[in-house]
Length: 547
Image 1 (cartoon, rainbow, N blue to C red):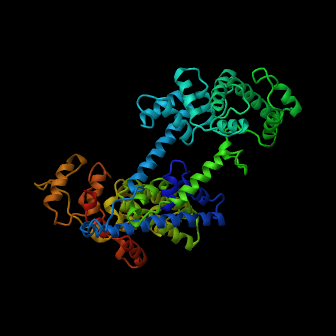
Image 2: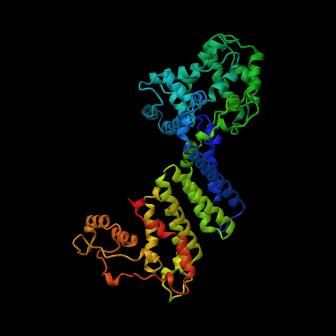
């Protein structure tokens, strides 16, 4: 939870928890037919995350049981929430998502991207240069080439934004080369010369106002800035074979200081600065690693940010665990269930299998506690898919004279999948929705094999209030009324569901319906024990979960 709150909910930090889940899930998938050490290690990490989220749900559930008594405590025992409250963190996470969406649109088309950011509430309804400049400087994920293209446009708004963007930086007491390096760290210069000229001119005007030094005018700063960019390309472009010398650089800049020469030591310092420390204008500037703080000003920002983060680190409390556990689960649940299902279908190791089944149980516990119906139904569907995959594999080894349906009650992995599926359904039946389809499909297979408990097979015929048989689904309303009136007459769950399920257009004659159960026959003791472990009578004996 601390990782999620301090990184995933921080606009300027990476989604560390989400990336960690992606990494673990990806490396859980085996490249060959068996699990290797990396797969098992990744599985352990993934199961630890699921277990932690499930424990948070349990702990929060226990705390909720005492909610009424807690509300009666005095306000002194419960001080006002701190600034880093649960709601604030959730708002930060939502803002971070909106910023990511806005950055994606801006990178495609800057002008349309700003309009999209307005619709998300990231920018005011009336675009202002100050707000746009702040957005370009602080929004994570913006493409630096797109920023440079936008800043170089000749439109009035773009020029105002360029001015605000430049003036938001301080170049006091910085050498011209270092100031230019700091300025170009935030974007990539566009390719058109006119756009470059507008950007460099704006920079030169601002620099001259703050640190004129030996420069006689803003024009001198403009010309020299252009010369520095040319020098940087010449010295550090591998395609340039003959590099510019210091003497050539001095000669190139003669008479630019209001028809006078700049001090030789001033130009020499600039030359050696660029020679020893390239101005990086590539798109991956932020990922470049260097120990020179002048060469990479973003390291200063990073260190300052981390110092502030550790000094004011937000520690999640138990009372917040359930809320954050839900949010954390939602960013990774699909990858988790996919990874667990692959391990479940692949492994032959009993220990790994037990851990995977425990992971399924913890997954369902989180879904149930947070009322995540879609995610829980997806888990049931995934288990059903694995079940049928096991059945298909076992069908190849089936004796020709044996009914194919017996695979569903004799194959070991099919039985394990069915047990897990029904155990989850039994514990969290009130949260199931479409998952019932998978369960009832398996129940109907048991019915065809006469492998259901006798209590689920014995039933009265379906009749209306006058005793006439019901033959098709168009009489569903009468069936509902009949079941309501005769609720105590033992109408079986299976007959009711098979009718509502639409298993047949016409109801079979009462004498043709298979009512006998093979579970009580000699030799079927193991089958009867396994069917009993599914707890079908308890799960299906009442239809309250299907109301």
